[in-house]
Image (cartoon, rainbow, N blue to C red; front, side, top):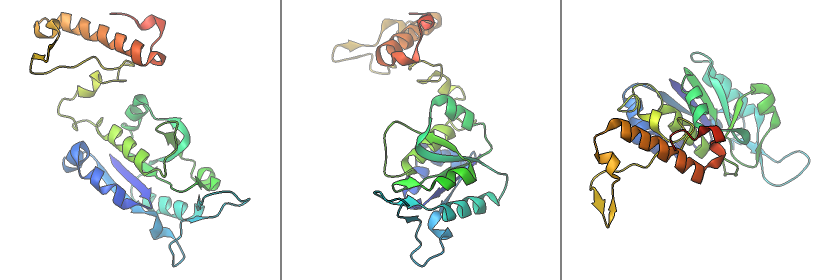
Length: 231
């Protein structure tokens, strides 16, 4: 997969791209991530990417010209990517959305900043708008990093075990069951006997029941009345 990022703060991405799973994925050649500085596509000596909003109001608005120029320049190399606009007005970013995006050969993430986007960025580029939650951040850089991390770890060959993400929270529509490791007992809290029994059928049944129970307790919005099997 190739992932392009258009941003006015390319330096924010380097620490994330050079660490952990994303670094390993890049070293393995599983993903090619390129960061483009939006200011390289401005026309004035101040390299301005924003301006005051028409009609008045607080804050500054990201200008349409540099964004469109940057996107078109990036897209001139290779196949056209799926365009993603980081926006609190976008569709909620979920695990299923990450799985869908992981199947794309190329993504282009537009990480805006300031008060708002010039609406013509939406009308001209027609990107898919994505939100990581119902709150407002100072820019789209952190949401872009979240999307990239969630997508890259799903690419084939990135994680050590190919089925590792199949058992995580949200992968099956449920939260993940409790996990334990050594020591078997700590300050009076013991690992459940079933996990030390060696009976794989019992372990699987216990994990399913715990996943359902935990989801009902913490995220009842994720589970329906018909999903209580194994409880």
